Image (cartoon, rainbow, N blue to C red; front, side, top):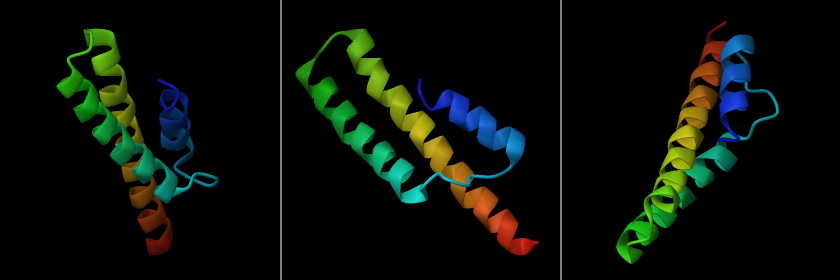
Length: 75
């Protein structure tokens, strides 16, 4: 949930200045692997959902990085 304010700020300002695309990409990949591990372990639902949501928001943030950097290069 920590990435939601960043997603909103990036959307409003149309800039990802100060945000590393590699960092959020690695967060998304790490959340995917942790999510698979938690599913295999059969842990309870809140612990199961949290890394999936974090990974989703991290990959959305990565997509914003790619989109806004490409948009900046076009202008």
